[in-house]
Length: 152
Image 1 (cartoon, rainbow, N blue to C red):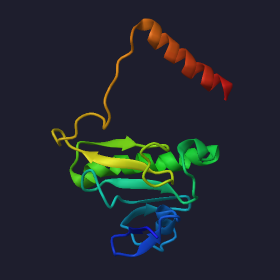
Image 2: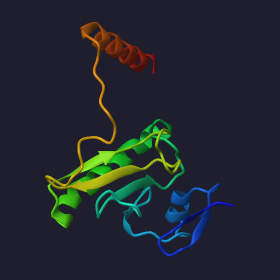
Image 3: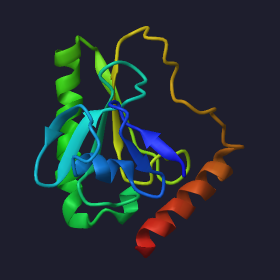
Image 4: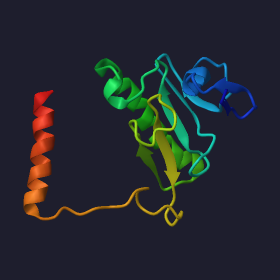
């Protein structure tokens, strides 16, 4: 059986959600915020010290799966953490990111709120950039996205 060690060496089976275990206090974490719907805690492998993960208490794997009536509550906490980190950590700002499926290390919705400082060594985004072929290529992609949004 594979296990995921927590900061105090407790283990959680890989078939179980470690974030649910943190929310339920079965695995220790450095919790910085919690309310009836959301828990925020320090990432155990931070990009920079003070890197916070914000998770809904309910097990939801991706942002599209989050019930619409929970979105504002979730993002209000993300916004609150993003506002607090610069003052708390003498940072210049924050980087906020969510992975859905691809590169999502724990299949439980979580927003990364990373403190940033000018010249901190983090270069842009974590992935390579591409360019559109031409204006027609831009228009094609924009139309595909617009059509998908209208279909919802």
